[in-house]
Every structure is written in C-alpha cells, then in structure tokens.
Length: 332
Image (cartoon, rainbow, N blue to C red):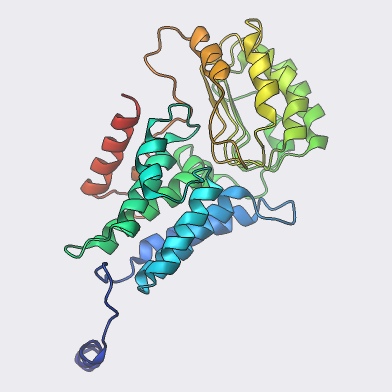
C-alpha cells in the first residue's frame, strides 16, 4: 500500500494541470454509478430508433461534466448551450438566461430551469477559490436525477418491480389506492383501446394516473384524452419524460376549457417531453378555476428528490439544504 501511495504522489508532483477556473477534485464514483444506472434504465424504453429526449439530455449533462473535469472550458460551454437549446432556453446570452427567462412564469418545469441557471453561473463565471468543480458536479447530479425516470421509479418503490412488468399485468387488477401506475411501461397507439376500457371500468376509483417515461406520443395521447377527461375523480396526471410535443397543448387546453372535462384535476405534468417548455395562459387559468383555494399551481411535483438520489440511502446535509431552498424559491 505504501508503494502505491508513493507512486501516486510522484505522478501528482510531476503533473501540470491546465490553468482553469475550476479546482480539480477526484471523481465522485457514486455520481457516475447513479448516472449509468439511469441511462441503463432508459435503454428498456427504446421502442424507436432515436433515444427519448430525457436520455439525450442526461447524456449531455454527463458529457459536459466530463469536459469540465478535463479542463475543457470552451467545450463545456458549448455543451451547456446545446443543452439549454434542447430544453427550450434558446438564448445564448448569459444575461438572458439569468434574467429574461427568470421572469417567465409559465415554465412547465421551473426546477430544471433553476438548475440550468446554476450550471450557467458555474461555467460562465468559474470561481478560482473553493471546490467549484465539486459544487458544479453536485448540480449536475441533481439535474440528472430530476430529468431521469430513476427519480419517479425510486420514490414510488418501482425499482423493486420485476423487469417483465407489462401493461397486461398492471391492468389485470384494480388500481391500488386510486392510482394507476404505468411509469416506465412502453405504451403505443395499439395499447390505447385496452387502456381506455380499463379506465372506463374503474373510472370512479381512479384519482391519479402515472404515465411518465412510457414513450407516449401525441397520437397515442390524443386517443386517450377523451377518456382521461371523463374521469370524475382524477386529480393528478403525470405525462412527463415522454415523446409528446407542444402540438397536443391546443387539444388539451381546449378540453380544459370545458368545465365538465377533468372536473377534479389539479395538476398535469408535461415536463421533460420533446418541446413542451411553457404552458399557455388559458391552460393555467383553467386549472386555477378547478382549484381556486390552492395557493400556487405547480406544473411538476417534487417528493424530496435529493434524498432518494443517494445510492447509499442517505443525503448530505448541504444537498438537502440546496434542494429545500430551490423548492421554496419556486413556490413563492
């Protein structure tokens, strides 16, 4: 052991790290392991030739972090620009990222926006003191976790579900505690007829439908929309992490304008889809009319994501504090 330490010390003494604004830190293995788990989880959902949007975005974050560790500041900056554009923050100006978009209230996913702003600060304005790279790596872990199916599956205990779980097995029994849990099960147009029949049969019992990261497309969702809108007790509808585009917003908004449709709904999650980055004002107004006593209208729900993201089953105090501060700032 002593020989290995001496050899390592000699290598460090002979190396000449590039001059950058970041302080080099050892790679945090738990972050790399977590990212690889998330990417492998997404492999099961590839039903088309191209990867789903969330998987592409996680890959960008991972590559950007690697560039930062290697001292490739210009390359990391370009990767951040590409990631911002993919998330709908099309401006390449840091001032626009920090100020113009911060005042935009109809964001479909304000937490992703907030984390991207933090990354922009670290990359465009690198600090020379302290563990700046370590702080940036923590933000990358939070963003990776937030955009991945791993966050939803873990907080709902779905990591224990057998890999061969499929639509047929889920629809073979009534919804548990009023929740129809389909997260992570690929859904195509051909599955909509069977799903509609199930929803119709259990309409009076369903209060929540979880269809995040199911490869859901516009065509499939529009076939399902009339049935979803007729559910009398449906309160929450999760459609995040799919292949849906903003083309569905018109149909969904028009449906919400009808007070007889979605009579009990208070929350619809459309985040992390192809190009749904903001919500039309009539969409939000229609939701407000359904829950006038609610102090705010979240477009995403957070359930202590930072706590669940730690593979060791615990979370660092500073991570928890950062997450709490982020969530509090977004609901003010």
